[in-house]
Structure formats: structure tokens, C-alpha cells
Image (cartoon, rainbow, N blue to C red; front, top):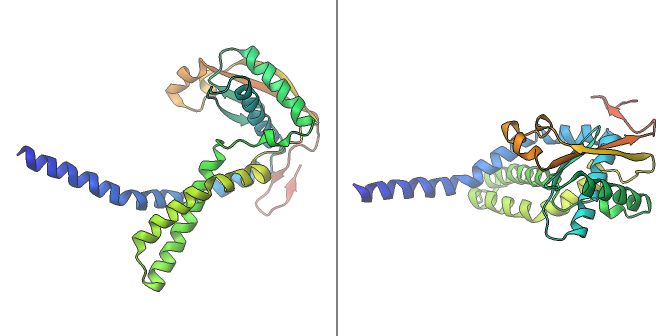
Length: 229
């Protein structure tokens, strides 16, 4: 009886591993209905893109000061959040240095390799390669499973370069000439976007308020592509 149970568990495990690339590709295809619209909306919001750039720069400055520390962050129209911090003072100083360096021309600070945009890039690539694999597999009669595996591997290899390009041209804007760091305050659990886990995350998170004086900082794109100021 125990032997049969082991065989059954082993079969389920192998079947799951076999189906995993297909399941991953299918969820990636689903992202085609979400991520492009999100990227379009972010591209049309200059304030959010500039806050996102300053978020990256602030985290990079903090990592320069203490190599090895891990931080997470996300941005909104009011500024950005940094997770994994010890005090508001360390983030305040890093944010002001980051702003000064971005204004001085260090635009590379606006780009971070570990940004969530890389996940978006991986899903978009996996979706495209999956659809290509389906077309090639059915049309040429090639092994569809191997094509799907190859597409996933290729998407993982290209996700960082594409993610960096998306950051550079879509999700960040390093022009902070009309921005000012206001203040840094402890984050609230409801701001953490993590449900009940927000209570734990908020204990080591802060919000950086950023103010923009550029009247043209926000561009909202309508569905027909027109810009509504």
C-alpha cells in the first residue's frame, strides 16, 4: 500500500512538472489582456513615471551606502514607498541625494535591474513565444512541447534586457527638474497592497511624498490615443 502511494505521489509530481511550462505559458497569455494596458496608462502619467524613477534612484543610493541590504518599493501619484528600512531619516537622506544626482545627469539611477517591470517583460515575452510556438508547431509539425520549452527559456534570457528598455522608455522618466522631496513618513498597512500582510510590511516601510511643479507633468491618454491634460 505504501509503495502504491509513493508511485501515485511520484506520478502527480512528474505530471505537474510536465504541465508546468504549459500552465506558465497560458498565464502569460492572460497577461496580454492586462500588462499592455497598464504600460500604456503608466506611459501617459509623467508624475508616476518620475516618482518611479526617484524610487529606483533612492533604493540604489541606499544600497550603495549599505551593500547587501535588500529593499523593495512601489510608486503612486503621491510619491513612493520603500520597504525594508530602519528609519525615516535614512530614506529621507537617500531620496534627497537621489534627486540631486538625477538632476545632475545621473539618469542611470532611474533604472533598476530588479524592478517589477522585468516580470512584466518575462510574461509578455513568454506569451508571444508561446503563440509563435503554437503557430510553428501546428504549421510545420515540429514538437510543440519542445518549442514551448524553448520559448520559455528564451523569454527568461531576454526578460532583463526588455525590462530595462521598458523602464527607460515607458515606466520611468528621469526628468526631476520640477520635483521636490516633501517629507518621509511611516507607511500605513492599508497602503501596502498586501492585504493582511500589510500590517507586517508597514512596520519596515515608509512613504516618500514627492511634489511636482510642472503643470504638464500629467498626460492622460484616451482610448483613441488623444492626450487629455
